[in-house]
Image 1 (cartoon, rainbow, N blue to C red):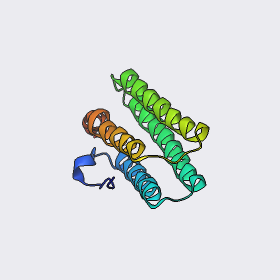
Image 2 (image 1 turned 180 degrees about the horizontal axis):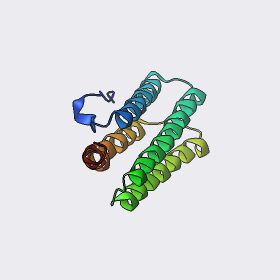
Image 3 (image 1 turned 30 degrees about the horizontal axis):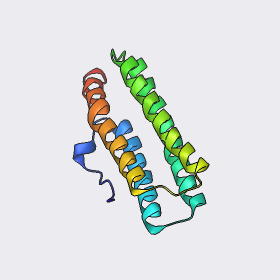
Image 4 (image 1 turned 45 degrees about the vertical axis):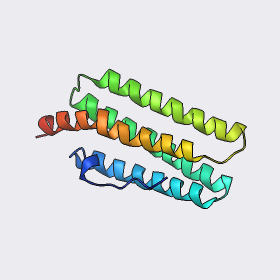
Length: 134
């Protein structure tokens, strides 16, 4: 699996959100590299947990902005956040229960999970915030 490359196509044009997204992309790439290199399960678990923790923080950050700027689609976006966290926690639980390393399929799932959320829900939020934050 190749790394996610941060470029303008992933930018939502809101600096504070883009900074969060860059950090999440960096963590994903560390995880991706660790799986490819066969790093220890403990190390991979630590990186996965950091990715999840940072993602949860980022989602709360976005939700705070949505509340502040009265984003009408907050509920749907929040539900998407909850579904994403539930699915990645399920992946993490499988990792623990089966005492296994992440597979390329897991990494591909996480890559799609991150990029599709940014390119879909977050782009729409970014357009809204650009108008509201003037």
